[in-house]
Image (tube, rainbow, N blue to C red):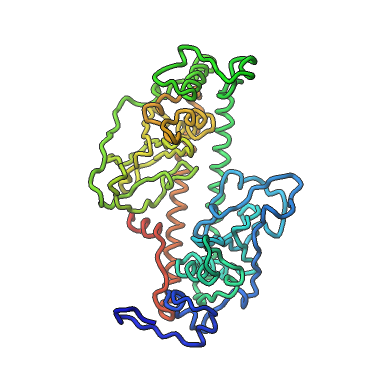
Length: 474
């Protein structure tokens, strides 16, 4: 095979074509060419591993108790399962399609990712878009996950599985794909990775349960009526709703007037306070970065999960002409609230980031006079999310204006309680940063183990973007 310029010519043996049973040139010219030709490899079939397909919603109900928490593709990250709130509940069943310690959870569709399950992983189901690879020892499981997280394997598996609108990995392709033999150091490394994963799971569960407790306490400050309650029974049979003049401010949008009424009732009946009374009068710079093409660490909405924390490594991005970025970097004690009200996010900077990180204009920066960590936890509760959702503007009704965000009313949480909440979040973030540093150090060692195979199989690996971002920040 060659290109029109004659610069590269690749010869493919008939044996290799017969072995792969395909004419796709990308397979033979891809990064795994030397791996496919070598005999110093091992497959899941040769390792006698079992591959279990995730649970299909069309299958008979597994649990008589109803819906169960389930791991989905979005929860599968590189080597690690991303836990959501319901994943921290006690498992209801022990089905064969539930995750077990030692399993490797693999996504079916691109991008292919593989995560390790450990003793602290909750034994919930995986859905039909995932496979469970079972029966490997600890070192083999880590090595399999490391290889599958490489783009070369993702490309090979999706191509080998056949073309489709959404490429999906066939079980037979996963069972037969060859992997380079792992080095002797992978055994010790695998134990360190599993131990770190266990500690990270414990840390995640601790935060989830604390955040849930904060939610319950905030709910106690709510009055008996809800945001959607009507004024009286006569309105239930009418298409119209009536509001007092005091509920109407600068907008006649029904949702905006309704939230005004709700906030007024919270202030009068439950002694909630306006957020404007809690933040400093100091004006945060609204200047923007105006030079497209610069590489900067940008905090996007997708960079922050439900842990309220700034990632330990924020990748460098090119500033696009259409992207507006605030010129003032995130500083210690800043609270960032997403103006995307359909998917609220909150971030609290308990300490100054190691390198400058600049928020995009989908974030609204708040600086509270005291206990900013506690107020970040309050802003992260459903009671506040319901207010935000009614503040949306525009035809799409997804974003709220910064001026309206500051109209939020918050519960009058006692100061001694807020001090405890603030201290917990700061301690948790400090411990989490330490675990993140350990994790990225281990990822560096793992990638070094992958690079050792270059001596035999050529340069087929690619360094993960987040690992590179962490190394750049060091």
